[in-house]
Amino acid sequence: MEQARTALAERIAQQRRGVGDPRPLVGEMRRSVLLVPTVGERLWSARLGGVRWICGFTDESALARFALLHASGDQAMDYAALLGARIVDEVVPSLSEPAGLAVDIATEDGSMFFPPVVGIVPESVAVDAGEAQGERS
Image (cartoon, rainbow, N blue to C red; front, side, top):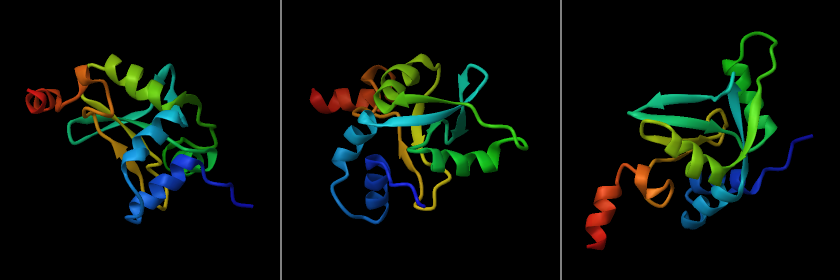
């Protein structure tokens, strides 16, 4: 039996199909509980394009697909369940480099990236914070 999609997974799938308004996607991400693989005490992340991407998954099925690709042998993959808002508001600023959130990177519908920009992460760590300041002047 196939697991019902979370609201965030459904909204991501719609965006990947070019359907709907993308603006509510950030709010949905912030309200959603994401499963983030852990390695010891650290959240699993990857670097791509000069950004550290914290990898979160909308449900256990999405996490399991990822685990099949990245886990060693038959070992279970540990994870933390965190609100998207906590990831972008607390975890991202605690890192010493540009960081964002990558959701469902091993999913057939494709992943969704929430980059380190104003409106997603706090302005103090957003890579475009200076540009945003200039626009408001």
